[in-house]
Image (cartoon, rainbow, N blue to C red; front, top):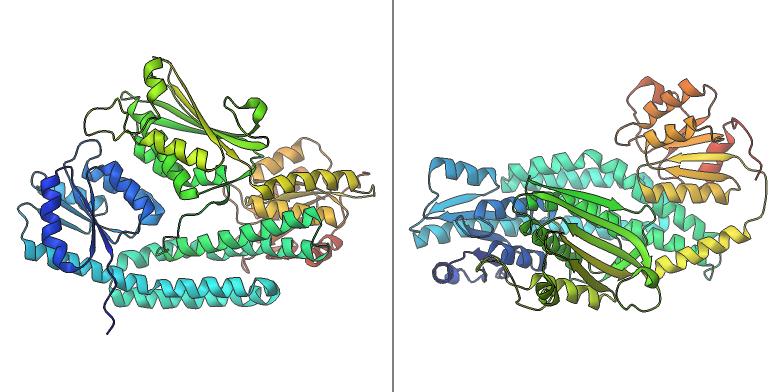
Length: 552
């Protein structure tokens, strides 16, 4: 039998002697032992390496063991990582209960019995290895999705059945490992499976149809091809989240949407700073894609947020903004081109001029001994420069600190803007009617609007039912409404009912991947099955009588 490959065990303790003792006890297991002297160092290691088990001391400065465990559990990548607490002080029943509430799988008092520690660690590593075996199912599902993107019509008929089969297989495998907690988590995640996958396939189908009508050199075709690639990447990411056993990928730059990345990180940031500090996110609606390593960017934003928190011990506000920018608005020397600027602003104590000049130097810190390595801002600066961008920091005593980062717009996004401008100039004038597209998924909304325009009509996209009602009430001429059904806040059926109270004759088409819809009102509406292409969209529009004609 082939011996198991060693896995990583992370040992977290602020006392070097205890780290050495743990290393001596566990060295016989033949696994890779990684040591961290603080909670922040442990988080940095977790973001860079795959860890099977984390052994945490409860009483540590800066971040105690309970706070570190909560931050680890808040990040979706570490939801299934085994956590084990060790303490010589916090050993009451209340402490043990608190540890388990923060996600621990075990809690050991000091002095530690070496044989007992080794035995318990072996159990959790065995469970980890069995869990890793299940990732083969995830890889197989991803491979099938990638192979079938060229035949989306067929895959649309088979995907739901295959996902159901894989879900049942995973549930059986999880039962064999006796991990009921993971099974419950999987059940919660599968609730929105069909809707999310249909939206992803909708983006791929619309883009590939668009490309098929144009020569490869057409810039707009490149834009739609990029959108199709994003759909496939998001589909892979969704599969990983559902399985909850995603592999750690090698770090590499990729085209990302900064607003989406920060939205996904926002919950962890809020829990990291605590209840006394408010985090305000302000993003422009038209943010371009940037090319950057998302893992490094997440670590940089976490570093900046924790620095801002430390500057406001009595509480305050952290504002994170993002907008498109160019050389004319930058405060540092940048090459010609377009950029996205992200700013992290706090209203804390601020820095004097001498501290500001040295704040990005490696190992320079003004924090108490043991509470800072002095590598946070230097790491952020290195990441920004290596990504082709820059960093600029402004601060003054009593006036807070602002950290501005610039990242170059991805080449595909630059081509997209140029193609869009050219398409508007070249579009012929013709009679059309106005279609209001309502979908909470931006990619699906933009693809649908583009297909409507390609059919010779005008289109407007809004991301929610509330905004759609605002458009209707504004008196803007709308002939047809195409709305997604499963949306937060207001479903497509509820939106249709509200629109018909304002305009009883307004044609409404319900786009959905669900066969059965709650509510009798939604059942009576014309249906457009997701994912759909231009032909299906044209047929659906041909079945309705526009409320009014708009001359272009």
